[in-house]
Amino acid sequence: MGLSTHVLDTMHGTPAAGMTVALYTTDGESATLVKRFVLNADGRNPDGPLYDNASLQTGTYRLVFEVAPYFKARGVVLPEPNFLNRVALDFGVAHADQHYHVPLLVSPWSYSTYRGS
Image (tube, rainbow, N blue to C red):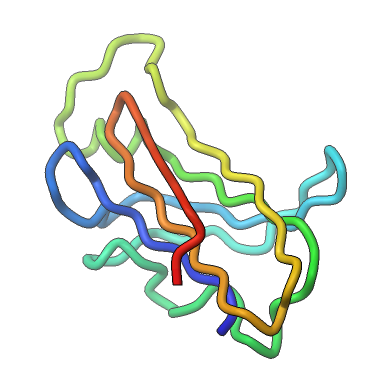
């Protein structure tokens, strides 16, 4: 239960270890930073779930993934301006008693996401 994320680097076929991610709560156009973290070797938050099942609340959230800095750190030569600099995913939690897993599959030129289990 709770909220988690996982990032896979589809260019290299590996977890996106070292990518910086920020979690926000949102209210309309307003966003409040909850936490910023760097993904571990498995491409996940090193502290575990972003919210455990007791802390997750119904509402809207945003995950912001620092894509260009991650790929630059991996030695990928990117054009200026970058095609993808950051990926921001806005999503809603309608059932706080369920698990919300928000994975990101990303390259310097594309990304996809879905609600995982």
